[in-house]
Image (cartoon, rainbow, N blue to C red):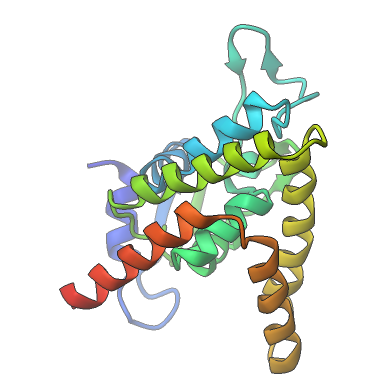
Length: 211
């Protein structure tokens, strides 16, 4: 069991904030952040963007040809594109993900100044291997959408529009009318995610039965 996994279990108690603060290494945060994303199935979605020239790492000085990332940090581990924000939102872990990383200081654009040890009192989102199927479903939708549109890079444009709208939704606060408008807009933007929506409905139905 990793240091972060242990920390997540301790920090997930319903006791007052700070009572069960856990000290974790910067490396543990990065390793377990990537592990959590992997368990959620996000890599399937990332692979589609990369295959169509939409890697979020393009131009990063830490990216080496044939080797990949040479210096992953807390900032790029925590960061989510529009597709991943939407995906985590629909499977119900976006708030947990955002809240966890808000505890981590020193994040900057493609680099970090995070201390070697960090105190946290909120846990990394709980994962479930069933999310793998959801990630594959959304990835399949994205490939189909890109191939069916004449405009090259259509999904990359969609990703940026979805990113902007998801940010607005995440920061609309208690404005209920605005939240409803944004949710409707997102629903329209993702109407072609048919395989994902079917898999998501099945996942939610099974989750209710198991409860």
